[in-house]
Length: 160
Image (tube, rainbow, N blue to C red; front, side, top):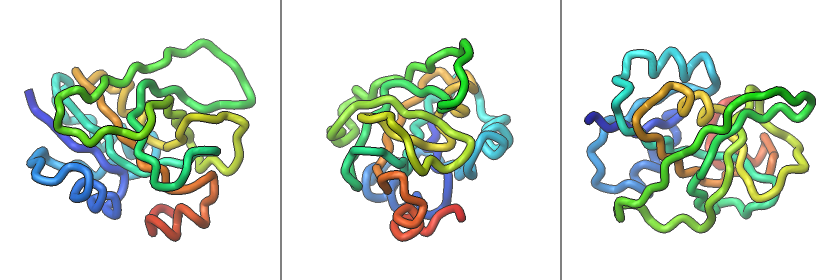
């Protein structure tokens, strides 16, 4: 089985160095958002194990909180329609630092600037990664902001 670490942007390589020191899994920089995820992962084998490591926003978790994601959903607060909730595999191999909290990750097509959802994180990639059908998908998110694009930029120097 092949293994990959998936990060959205080059600036997230520092997270790999900090939270996965010594891991020699290939790193794939996917880009931000659905189209970039689909294009960057289309040729990876579906029997691969992947870890999505990256920044995420939260309405109430403190900046810097380490979140182990338990499931991923799309965030569409204005409409309701049936779609699956995507289970994210637990990281139970003893190689990961203990996350401070376990939570749901809502994946969005745009940066979330406000939400009534609490005790969760928001990103722009995980649901699209999980929907690709890899044999195992794990995810750790580091809270970068409290739904503030300005705070996100200050910390990550990421997408504008």
